[in-house]
Length: 358
Image (cartoon, rainbow, N blue to C red):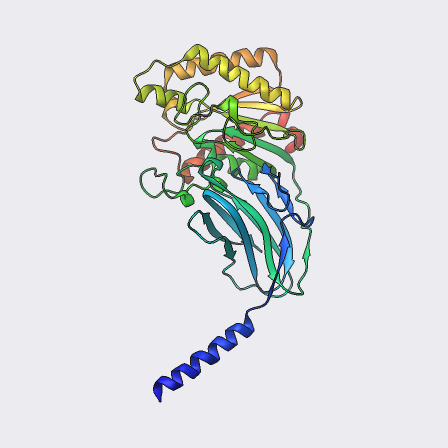
């Protein structure tokens, strides 16, 4: 009798849950109500690939439930999914679910969704198929952000935010603790209410590094590989570009007992910045140095970097430089990133070329 009562109770609960769960409709990724910010692979408009960290997707919607759908997952992609100011972290991996259900209850009225890719491009990417909301509910184009500045960062793991939420040693197995939203680059962009873009690859150098692609081969690509198609850089023009390389050239040569390639580093950095200038003729370009041991203490790197800066600034009045005082032994954690951002923010605020963006 007791088993029968439990069976009837379970059946009744299942019926109530089925009745409570709304039937869902798909708002496909190519719906004009979505706002995309960042560098995406849009070869298939109905399934754009979310590639680079700090890429963002936004839409307004109504209803009690929200799902996000993905396919074509390569590696690991972690997202900050924010609805009405409440953020949940979700991972989309080869072995994980391709549908994300937002876990918090949603009240009546209009909601604002923002999806932010926190893990870096070299860790993985995924195709976004759209969102699911309850049948009969509506979606809208979100209000346009009030950006004061278009700010792009180009760099390596320091700029990507690698390992910044790791509680102990640096680790590369679980990218959920690699959070670009809490990098020095993101903190700096937030201080200026900037439309923020981030093209950074862990391990990448100017001449040598811990990964194959070099900065000059990758900064303008759709994917973080040298053979990727080039991105269309005419669709978004930054006002300021911050570039930070050198750590991997220094660490790779040191660990492998090789001499630092100073002339090649200087020439490569000059070539990279001139390529950025060619793509963005009106932008101010800030060449950064530091954040870890190499940029702070490696004398050969410092001299080669200074030589590149002097050569570039002599011929281009819109090229500038800044050196961080704060640095860390392991990859910068969030507190380190905040300290670096505070330095860079203060310096930028004092520059004449930033007067229009304060």
